[in-house]
Length: 337
Image (cartoon, rainbow, N blue to C red; front, side, top):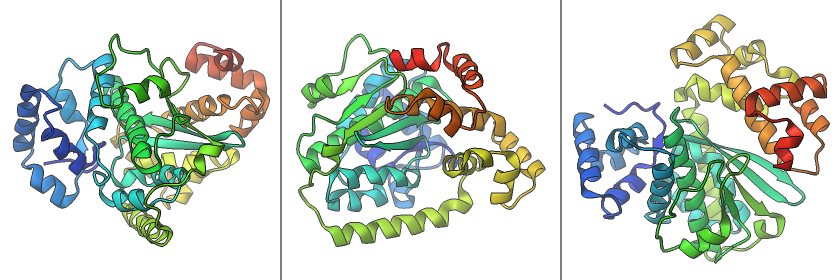
């Protein structure tokens, strides 16, 4: 059966993809065979609102590499509709501005745990880091490409074309980009070889109005999403719970003692539960620091020293050495690149 802790994609979006003829027949046949083996089918997935595991795509495309995953991400996004995203669909349609559409990424865990956003607002606008959690480089590229290009497509539908919103992907461009209905849009908004995968929305664009604005319906839907998110916290993996705590914690709080106390468990239990999920607090903490550092370095209005302090490093030299170990270059070299 489907493992609910597997990072995946929204079931309706998956079913629409299967029925769209965007995939080659052999891949569709393999995916249907996997569903049969897992004891489920398209109707059951949609009825129970179960995420479709990304690992299915690795099975359906055993030779999947980063280039192919990127192309599939764009093709998959072309099949997305306004009502493809379960509980996020209604607030998406009733959003009043670009900012309110982007706000819905906060509730992404309700439809997919395969990717997490990191928000960084500045006076120049909003940068949203996109990080995949598939544990597979190609699948991470697939889900990040899919999420980013889908958001561009939804913005076009709801707010008119917004060319100032750009998608930056942290790997080289594939030799050939896909032939899609939005090929011209992608050409102007898409950038490869970025220091980190992220979306950037300029400040002025955040306030652009949407076509079907319904403020009351949107706020009611957001309240409902928040309640659902709170209710599901009990079924969230410990790795995800730790990631969320690290996001909200102050630098001095990011310790095993503080996290264990917030989760109302002992340190030994925390370590055991993370080990059962194939990770550790140190690994999650280092990943958080690396992703936050890379995202903050995109904002040139903040000095490297300030970023080091924000992340809890006692001095700039220590931070620079650690960052170079992560990325192969110093923070200043990273920012310059």
